[in-house]
Image (tube, rainbow, N blue to C red; front, side, top):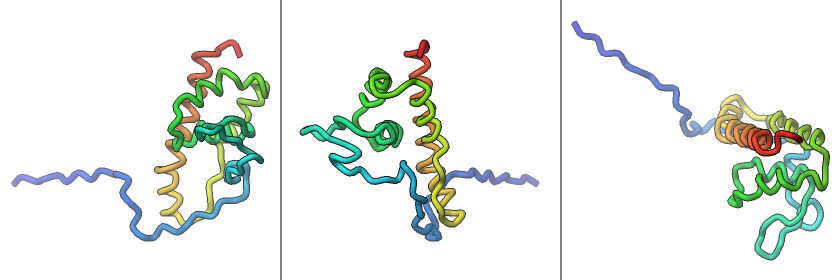
Length: 135
């Protein structure tokens, strides 16, 4: 007799319908962009100025189409903060509190948002160490 072995791969699938909207606790990462208050854009729509939290958020969100933001941030951050403060904000971003929701919602959020964002944060830190190792 030949037995066929069925392999079940644990792929992240689309939500089954039990996903509920996530409720974010108030924090610096969930504050909306408020032009001329916490972020300023130039005429082309690129970020011209913002808070340190906003620049770290935009550099690590994965939604940004401007791939020059992270290298420019690493080149210029010393003009507005110290290396240890910069690292503290990056670590806060990595350890961002998860929103509230049911188990399926949180699992979906972790796989689609949190894990990719953490990877971008790690890549930012690696680039910082590789390029500016003496900071």
